[in-house]
Length: 352
Image (tube, rainbow, N blue to C red; front, top):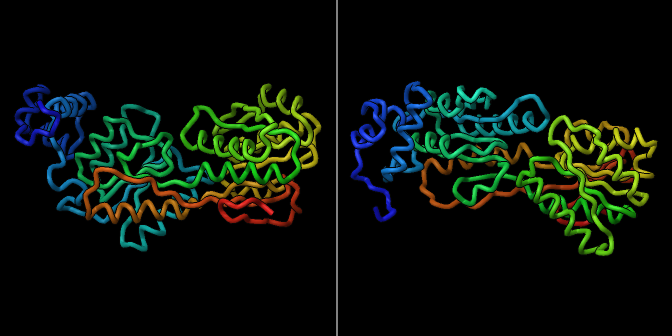
């Protein structure tokens, strides 16, 4: 084959290659019905091998049956991040005349969320944080509906539409702010695995230090994105770092682990340790002292993802540019501002 999709390949050809019935092939490629996972995988693998163009000339356009329904797929629905995303998506969906369905990515590999999506045949799918596997994408593409990634863990390389925030700039702003706070040493705490957004935030922070305090090393500490704990690595780093120590945590969860570490070491925030987080969760403003954090426009990001679903239903695209909405640093007591004051810096500008 010459590498181009072969539109002469029929469902019967795929059925013969996969060893299943023609009706089973039709159900897999159209996303209808509930078939065994092994059957779906054999059909999709045969279709790929035969270079079958499942989308044809109407790729990206809605199916005949359009329920005006958008699926929001998330790994959980029990934290501040998902609360804000769900609210933003719901408000935008209702404003644009869609209903919103919340779909959970469960731990059970046999309970595959694309099958549940296919059963409902929505107008589009928004996938938050998680990056679907190639097999899952193949199944979703068979539905010929828009797919939008919301702050994906890895870079989709233009293959899918995606929406996020200015992670690199947010890290840079955090670095500038901590430099201006008069810190003597710098520490960055980032989560494992090293997701795309975590790398971008750390790179932005390091660039700010390199630009304005090139003589100062930046110490790296590994943390956990969720359920962050105080580690020996964190304690040793804080003990050995010059005082006052500036810590940029790549999310608020890890920033609060720094708070707990400071308490164990008898260090005061912000006198001895100055902390900036990322996400600006609601509890950031009520912490003691209130946490300086880089605010993501989560509701706006989710709303933009809904708008992209609407737009992509009526046009084709082979390459997608990432949509980024600006972050903003909100300065509070953890970096020396009065505990009652929130000072929001303009995106990309140093804190004053």
